Length: 283
Image 1 (cartoon, helix red, strand yellow):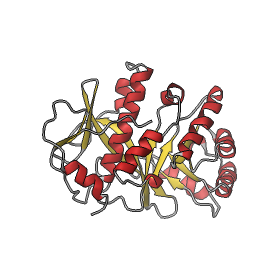
Image 2: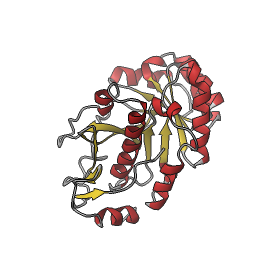
Image 3: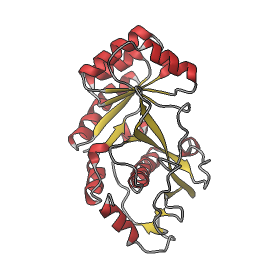
Image 4: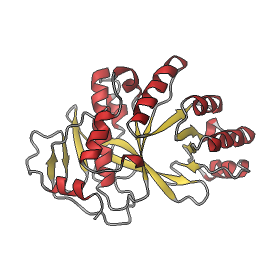
């Protein structure tokens, strides 16, 4: 069994849910309580552009629904929560996704992408990522497989993004960035030196510019992910335009909708319902 420390920790927990903000339900999912809402994780695959094999999964916070039809929790809460509350939710979601990812038996060789909310960039001071790294070390989970994905920024946030990225990197995490367009993508590659870079496929629909971007990313050992691919036409245009040997990855509803299970067709090992008392202060 992989991740034995995590499995043993979860199996030793008590059965009372009354005072817990994070617990394991009867379906084996880790669930959290926030603003009287019950939330859990859904995962969408990130796939190789070469053979469409799943190489990573991105975690999304969803309101709990037994049939994977939960709502985007950030859309529900982002406009009612203040900065401090949003930071707390961001931390809770990061721990929730980590547990829901690694409790499954199919994560070997796969990366986990965890998003950092834009409010966290300015609201948190000090050593970003240190507490989250300590939790991963206690549970003996591989931080090397986790990509902390930083949000799109405005020009005035450039120095903040660089500062946060360096802190996460010093704590051993890989860094992902999101680009609004090809010009910003090139700037982020040069300035932040990320491990991954995401860009909407519709914002990168210039074949010549795509090739330049992929070659620049290849030199910087950065993986480019074209996201929001929703139909065969977008995929075909991407494949036809990228006449290059530089690798890239793809993500979108054409391939996968977010689900609780990484591989729904496979039966996952369920953990007996029990509360989780771990601190979710994981900056």
